Amino acid sequence: MADCLFCKIVAGEIPARIVKRSEDALAFRDIDAKAPVHLLVIPARHVAAVRDATGADGERLLGSLLAFAAAAASEQGLDGEGYRIVTNTGRNAGQSVDHLHLHVLGGRKMTWPPG
Ligand code: 5GP
Ligand code: ZN
Image 1 (tube, protein in one colour):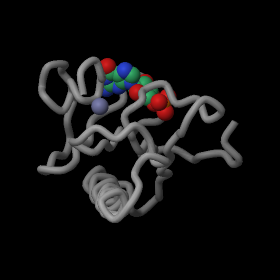
Image 2 (cartoon, protein in one colour; image 1 turned 90 degrees about the horizontal axis):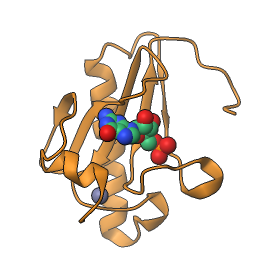
Image 3 (cartoon, protein in one colour; image 1 turned 180 degrees about the horizontal axis):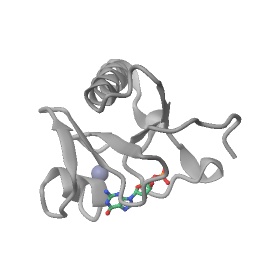
């Protein structure tokens, strides 16, 4: 999608520290990391947020994206101590980039509930 920051990262038009890639998904380091490991996991095709991943296609996308995030977390060595996967949707959650992304946070103890 034109003018979408994360579509530009998928296309290689904006650099990112990519840690895992498939035909359908990409994992790269958040530019403003909130934990020792902070990845963003995104679908290669533009979907604005989880609420927009509808129908059978959306269901497949969400399932494979979550599995991809778990595999990326595992490759980062996070399985033993654990990690958190978060996705912000819309204004109240503070979503700032309108291309669906899962935050994978690890390497420190998380607090609950999130702010
Ligand atoms: P949100 O606030 O929408 O849940 O998360 C967006 C995330 O994207 C933020 O954590 C922010 O630090 C990250 N981000 C914004 N711009 C860039 C960028 O150009 N490169 C990378 N790697 N991360 C970005
Ligand atoms: Zn996009």
